[in-house]
Image 1 (cartoon, one colour):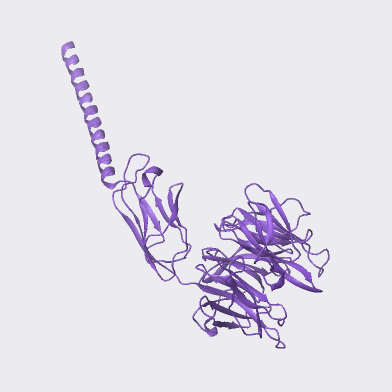
Image 2: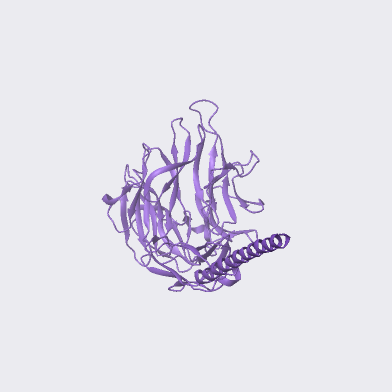
Length: 465
């Protein structure tokens, strides 16, 4: 009986060992199967932007999102754009991003391709090509109508007539001002609230339901300006007056995070003022006008260091495309007459010099606009001895090759803005010699002397890329 019991115990143990080995073999087979399938499936591409068939911004960035951490070095040279265009590639979290150096051509189609070969941290390889084809949308123009408040924001195609304008906002005429994100996807506008303060709102390029960004209650949050990357907005905040109906306080520079809505004063010194914020194209500098100092205050965003440039004009200027320089205006008395002169700030050299040739004070200028390529300057100029109106001029930075783009002495021009490619400019004009004349939005095409009237009784024109 003892031998039988022992044999029975051995038999059970053999069966158990056999079962364990079967389970181990099955597990190894399953693991092998998963690895084999993983090798066949490869590293997963979660998505590519812009999506196929999209109408994209000329400033769009190509993005490829992966479903797992990737080896950055394995992706070099795999993302290409056709037609080819120069740009920079960067890696952020699990996303590969290509930023073109120049704006994409409106109306043109592009194909982005991610070639196979990229490897994940776990060793998987991207096995198949991923591609998308998209078209760059044509820009529109935004403006407020009517020119004087109460007014709303409208959008219009450049080639359309005035009747084709589309109303984007519905604020009961409460629009104060607005700004457009660099990629044209959104705009931010300042609108009066029920407490006579001014709030900031976000709105899609096509209109729709706005999102409250900053509720300013009885304060006035005005003059918003987008950072180039679209993540922050700078604006001026004016505290409510000490008594109902009294003038608001002095403007101070604030910023707000577009995604979270977190907002705070940019400078904690309450004595420092700031109005009319403008970001450098590279996002490294932020400039405002400080009325208490009669000066421009330039902040280095990363360090907070400041540079102060004296000017009596009360407005910021036009950045060079690389953000290293700026053209500004100032006042000068000449023969008992106040003339607007142009000056060049070089931030790297910390230098301010006269602009526009050897005799810059002989003419009376308006605020300049630097072309996107940095090779031309658009400004309005009144020649010595001429009438009160300023005509539109195009010239090199040193004043050479200057030529008048307008010749109708009935009008004066201001508020000009280049399109993304430097081929057209939108601006407003007004007939100073006509009683009760109202601003008009006009468009000028480079290489043509024709100034096209787009919308009458309108102002604050901006490009919507």
